[in-house]
Length: 345
Image (tube, rainbow, N blue to C red; front, top):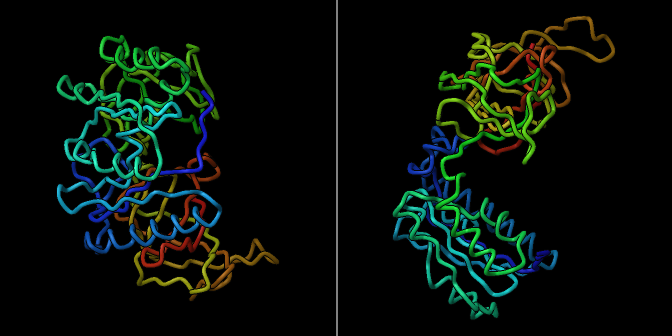
């Protein structure tokens, strides 16, 4: 089924924040120090409104529905997890892991869509699977459902997942940044420190004996370990990965000069930490790259060697050893502007 649309549904949040119930298996979520929940929600609303405006400016029909204060649904901005809409007029409701996410399902949203002209022919409700602790959130399920044209077959695929062998199948998808992965390798999970053995490597349906840097694969481990998005799998526990002090070369990208008293965010891939510039060691000038120039301030386009102090480790390698895991960006926590790019020494 090739299905496209010029109309999208967006839920405007009223209490957006870190969801305590989904944070247990979503590593991206963090409590931001110094920001009240009301401030976080206000920032989310501002970004939401700006995005709606940009979408409408290019001709996309955006149906905006306001969330409600009660019940408490901090993740309501992501309706794509609990519902999908199909060209045939079918609406599919999916079983959700978190109890407060189940409360996002609202009949009045479907009523609003019908008022806007979307004809609903049948509602396929799979939410009863929650009673059996079976969860199939739409972000994945639509991949299964929309590749099948026949409605009866699509319904059968979604229903049969309860009996499927894949109910008890758990693998971890990601990209190999460096080195080689083989069956039998012992891997450590960061930050938990738990370990297990690789028992299967897949690339979609193809089973592999090994995979190399650059490959995107699914890895199945001997033990059932709780691994969330953003965590790392490494072959050895290297103490350097846990460092909370980094020496790095940075390129300053902001019109405002670097501030040693300010708190910044350092981000590498999906991992973040609060950081401060502990020391400005020296400047590097392109016309004399081997010389070290005194550094009291770092201005726009300056290149400098600095020492950073992190609130928590983000598991970086020296850039010279592993380019895929040795670079980062620095973000102004007040403006959300990227102020620097850096490379670990």
